[in-house]
Amino acid sequence: MTLNIYSHVFELPITKVETLLPSALLEEMKEFMERNTLAVSRQAGKKKIHCCTRCLKAHALKTAKEMNFLYLEKLIDRIIEAEAGHNGYYMDEDDLIKI
Image (tube, rainbow, N blue to C red; front, side, top):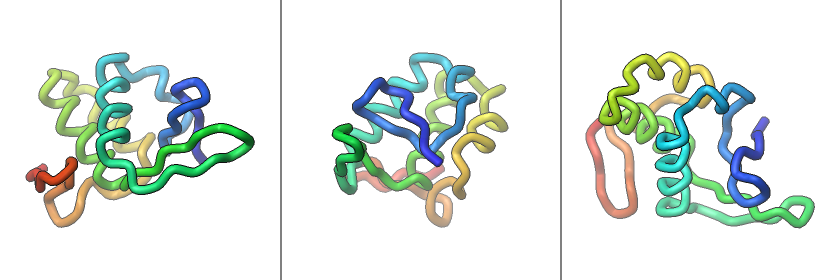
């Protein structure tokens, strides 16, 4: 189930605990989704951005660590129900990044 966390524009595959994430991390996740859009759909007149959930999770974990939000690792792991990355890496635009 997805939950709309950016008004009617962006949706992330997470549950209601996203309110526990710092706004700086949520903003970076939003920007990641914009940079790495795989598809755009409309549901009930609302725009929905789709990106690779595994890459999003890997990026969120790496960004949280860089922002010194180490305590968020378990929370991110629970709210994004996917494996992090692909074989130790994830894509951000054209860059292959090691987790």
